[in-house]
Length: 211
Image 1: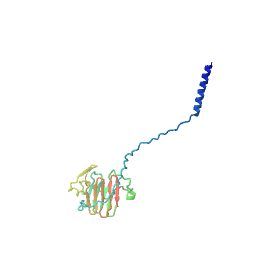
Image 2: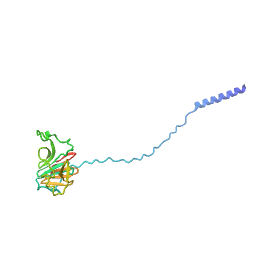
Image 3: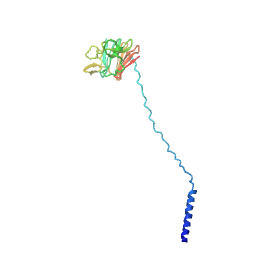
Image 4: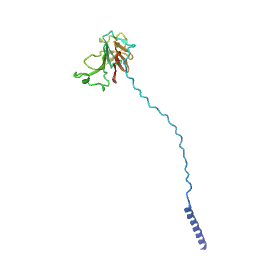
């Protein structure tokens, strides 16, 4: 029994020592690790595309133009047959192509009030450029007509459009009649007065006046 008592005293002494040690423990210093992030390599920045504003049309000069002044008027179609135009000594006109954007075309009540007819094209004279209504001068570029005499000796091609064969003014070609001139391009037909610099450009996108 004495041995058991000794063992008990030893165990109690050990337990008391453990408790005291636990109460006397203090945490050590906190070690923080500094992490350096890897270097960031900037990527290639693609510049925004440059928006190019189309150049404003101008009245073509007469250099290289075919002079049709010996004819009362010269009528022609664009190479596609969509736009019909006519040129004389004191005016030039083009009819709207069938599928032209007409959102900016004024109402007949403004162009030809009280006439009860439609706005069908644009023209330039020695005085200025403006829209016109049906019922007046028109373009008749049919190869069998009397207004395509200028075309017959040129060798320029014809085009069949809407069942009609028409004389064309090829892209890059110009006709001049006195001070009035017309230029055919893929972007449309431009006509104007070489003296005043006033005119118009017409295409499927619409009409642009040159002033």
